[in-house]
Amino acid sequence: MKFVDEAEIVAEAGKGGSGALSFRREKYIERGGPDGGDGGHGGSVYLQADASLNTLVDFRFQPRYRAQTGAPGAGRNCTGRGGDDLIVKVPIGTTVIDVDTEELIADLRNADEPVMVAKGGFHGLGNTRFKTSTNRAPRKTTKGTPGEVRKLQLQLRLVADVGLLGLPNAGKSTLIRSVSAATPKVANYPFTTLVPNLGVVSLGMERSFVMADIPGLIEGASEGAGLGFRFLKHLSRTRLLLHLVDVLPMDQEDPVENAVKIAAELGKFSPTLAAKDRWLVLNKIDLIEPEALAEIKQRIRDALNWQGKIYEISGINNLGCEALCNDLMDEIIEHREKLLADEDYAAAQESLEAEMAFEIRRTIENSKASRRALREQQEAGDFDDLDDWDDWDDEEDEL
Image (cartoon, rainbow, N blue to C red; front, side):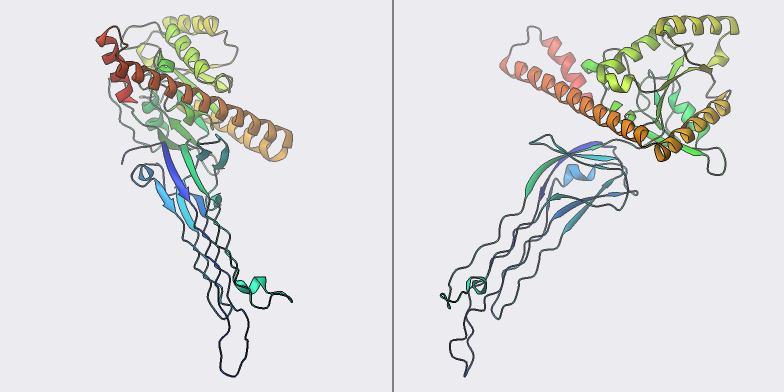
């Protein structure tokens, strides 16, 4: 199944039913008077998070959702049947944005909590409603109002406690395979991981957390190189980031420079996300001598002005992974307890996440606008060198 984390849909609520124009007609009852009933309310459209879903791919094939229209009223003061509401299931972690107003409508983090995204139309009034002492036989009715129609953008951001960050082949997938039951593909070439993967790390009774592995970044990702920063938004909900650095890269590049590149790309994507708690992990330490490892560690401290602890692991041999996971678990438990006990801390975290969401949406929209401008240039024949267009078009196809 293809992993899709963005989709646009149209939610169309049902129209209200029209009121009825009717008069009572029964034997031996003279001038029975008006008895036209009201129409029924139009159905509304709701979105509801469902734990059994993990992708938005279905919305690519069915982009329009309509709730039922209310039935018209009838004689004998019969009210029309109300239209049924439509509940659309989405994955947990889906953000709903109004495309026209850019308003954040909902952030669906909890299952079984429906959120209305399009309100059904109001019912029409039958002529009975307009009977007065001076107007005994009104012929006035009203039609039901149209239901609300909204164009919505759905963005899926995975819900995880720890997010893995690093270059391709830094060992992120190997680490998540080592510490959880997740089985992402592992191979010795870049971009083996093409979609995010989740793994549950279990350390005992009531000691477990969720780890997210996203496709690796490369230099220039903010300009669309490689897979760009398409999947970086999935790191915004995490408690902390785990920055993996390969101490012996396959391409013989300097691991210190690689660490600096990733930090720079993260800052270009979202300064708030870059300021999130980030732990530094040196991976594949079984491939290097202790003296060389100590030198790299010190150089990274200097280059990043790193004050915190630097972990040393080998994901494939599970070396140092247990201690790392236990420290992560302690940090996550402390965070969860503070969220429950400290209202100011919880409010600050919510504010930071809202700020991150705004920055991410702005960066993604700016990126899309740049790609549209380049496409318009190509259609107008403004590219000086056709090879430049071909290079850009290849990157566009990957996105």
